[in-house]
Image 1 (spheres, rainbow, N blue to C red):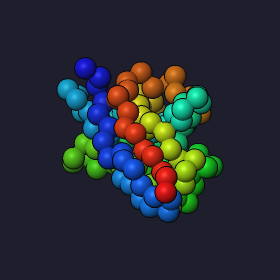
Image 2 (tube, rainbow, N blue to C red):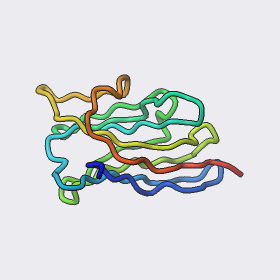
Image 3 (cartoon, rainbow, N blue to C red):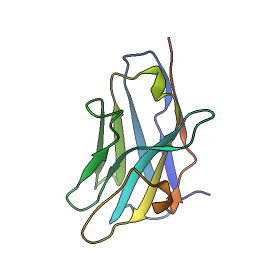
Length: 128
């Protein structure tokens, strides 16, 4: 069983919205930085956004800036990715990854190898 669980994917028309959730199975997300990555068919996995626990600090890929928003609810121990104005090129399997947060707090969308814990992914399809 993978330690993270993603949910919230689905089929949406261009311009629509979805909110993805990432929770942990068997451990707490406290003091873990969380990254969202996606993989389109035939392409490599790419970073979308990440958030630290302390701060928190957030980062976004240029392709999603102004459309996606990452947040975390420390009480619910859940990280959310709000995706607005979705485009067909946003289609893919979305994964969340977790890594013990370094000091000072930081996260990355440039290297999925930094994240040792992953979920099974959730499919996002943007199509008319």
